[in-house]
Amino acid sequence: MYQGTTNHGASGPMGWLIYPGSQVVLHVANDDGSRLLQLISFDSINEIIEWYTGRFCPSKRIGLPDGGAILKGSFTTALILPAESHITVTVKRKGLGIERASAPW
Image (cartoon, rainbow, N blue to C red; front, side, top):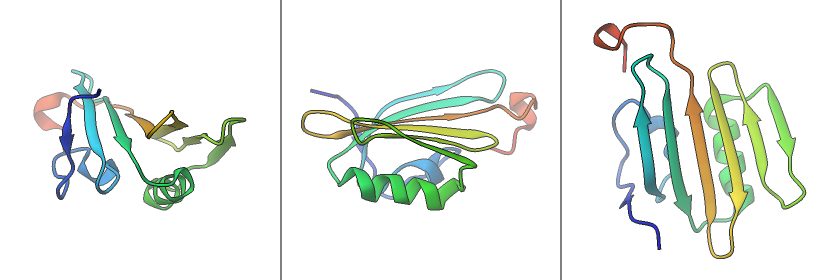
C-alpha cells in the first residue's frame, strides 16, 4: 500500500496541482526549480482528467487506451492512469530557469 498523506487543503508550490482529497505519494523538488509530484485518488478518472484540464489548460490532451490521459501544457505535464483500485496521477512542472532562492514558489 502507498504511504503518503491525504490532501486537506493543499499548500506550497505544487498545492494548486494536488487533486482534492488525493494522497501525495511523492514530491521531488529539484535545484533548477522543476518539481515532480505523484499522488493517488479513488475518484473517477474522468473527474480527475477534467479537474486537471481546468487547472492548467493543457495545449495537448492525449487519450490512452486504458482510459488514462497525458495532459501537456507549457510548463506542466500530467500523466493520469487507472490502476486496479485507484487512479495514479504524476505531475511534472518545469523549472523556470530561476535560482531556487529567488523562485516564486
